[in-house]
Amino acid sequence: MTPPRFLRLWCSLLMFGLLLPTRAGAQAQVPAASPGWSGTAGAAPVVFPKYAGGEELEVLPLPILFVSYDDGFYVDLFRAGAYIWGSDDKKKGVSIAFEPRLGFHASDGPRLAGMATRRGSLSGGPTFDWEGDAGALSLAYFYDLSNASHGGYVDVLLSRPLVHDDLWDASGTIELARLDSKIVNYYFGVPSSEATPTRPLYEPGATTNVTLWFTGQRNLTKRYALMFGANVMRLGAEAADSPIVERRYVPLVYLGIGINL
Image 1 (spheres, helix red, strand yellow):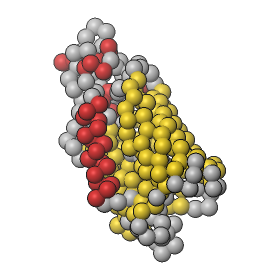
Image 2 (tube, rainbow, N blue to C red; image 1 turned 180 degrees about the vertical axis):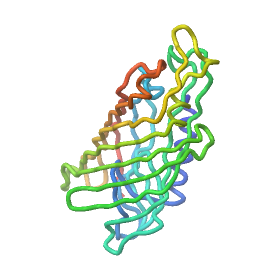
Image 3 (cartoon, rainbow, N blue to C red; image 1 turned 120 degrees about the vertical axis):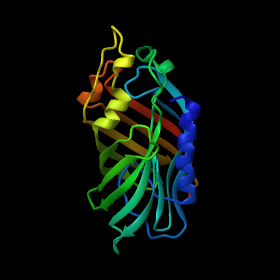
């Protein structure tokens, strides 16, 4: 997906988050009790491949949001949602959430030459979030709402705070995403109409991607913070074995400035 389309997709997600405000982190957290906005909102250059499995990187300025509003709405980096139920102790909650997914154009890499565009998509579905003393868990099911792949996936996030004080706030997360065959085939498959001598027919099945996250911020003042984050996703075998994949490990890095709300 070209940068303008990615920005339109992300802006749609951001608009949802602003109209139905939110809560933060690449981690599972249930809503806070304090009224109004909380968290950190900023922007940063984000470095990531042009498509999942592609070698060439690109840099886009994007909003970096870890914010929530009251007890219901949140933007959690690339996830936005609204809680529809929460326990009295605020340790458990059920929400409806949304996430974007990148597609690609034939111009995004040499192995894609002559292939049809794979559209980016917006997926959504229910999540169950639980927070304890040792960390947090989020279990979700997302389905393609934009009629691109017509597929779905189960997503599990396990998070643990690494440091939390007046200056530093950082956490580590492991994410497991079980993608069904429709998603994997749409983004990593090669139909007979696109097969070539160097790009054979490929019809993958379901697969599991594993992503390690590190996200956080360093408070420069009470108002401003340096926001940073990085992840690396290991494509599951069915995706990694695709003839269009140039690298199995997919990185993402950002570093920017935010405002503490």
